[in-house]
Length: 280
Ligand SMILES: Nc1ncnc2c1ncn2[C@@H]1O[C@H](COP(=O)(O)OP(=O)(O)O)[C@@H](O)[C@H]1O
Ligand SMILES: [Mg+2]
Image (cartoon, rainbow, N blue to C red; front, side):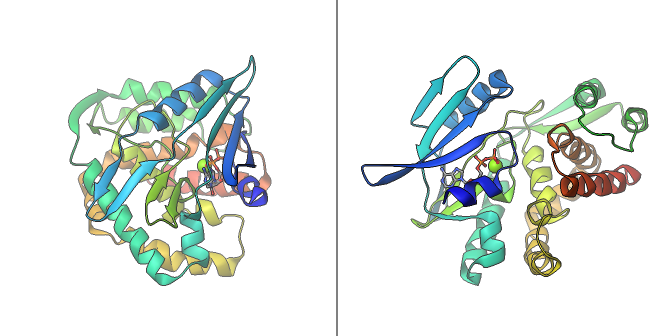
């Protein structure tokens, strides 16, 4: 159990499973960017449960927060079940069908509760500037190239509304109790369901969760990714917000750069950033 958690972890956080009175708990400890971490914890705590038809979606409850001077730990129940990439790679087809229908409902619901807002491109440019100043490895795309492309569009129409913030397949757990659970929430510079849309693309279009796996596992996953990409609601979002999605998608990929710690991820990111930038 512990091994699975550690292998899946990309952030700096440390994950442990402990047993208390025959129940399993996950302890996640952060030692970076603690003010941001506190906001993320709050976001997970404040998430309102949702019901779609006969499935329900909740955020995994955080039952304890321990703050030390340079660390924050959270405690939450260990959810028995499968995360999104387990479902795609190792699970029965019927689980995938439920997962697919969950994804569809999630986006239909998120896009019901939005307010359109025209935002100035300066919000996006500021974010890009932040990312470039925290960069840990040299990427071949210059900040200027990106900003000049963004500057071609003065105003962006963004559907403002709730989002998870890091809606990758590994942050979704399909519980053995039939419920869906979200973990690892992230506050963003722009709260829009489009953030969840581009994070999902990070897996289904660019193969984030399978980047370290064998070619044959990647091929297998692609069959499922294609089915997710074909969901009518996702097609609709892509068409309706083409320009906004392109920019948020690029920023979302760029945001990975400050956390890159291995060569596979570095190559993966460079390759896709180049492609996405060419397509702006
Ligand atoms: N409460 C939990 N119950 C079951 N599995 C969990 C739980 N929390 C984390 N995991 C597993 O560990 C992985 C990494 O946890 P996560 O909180 O997303 O860390 P990271 O910040 O490294 O992405 C998840 O993808 C999931 O498979
Ligand atoms: Mg995660």
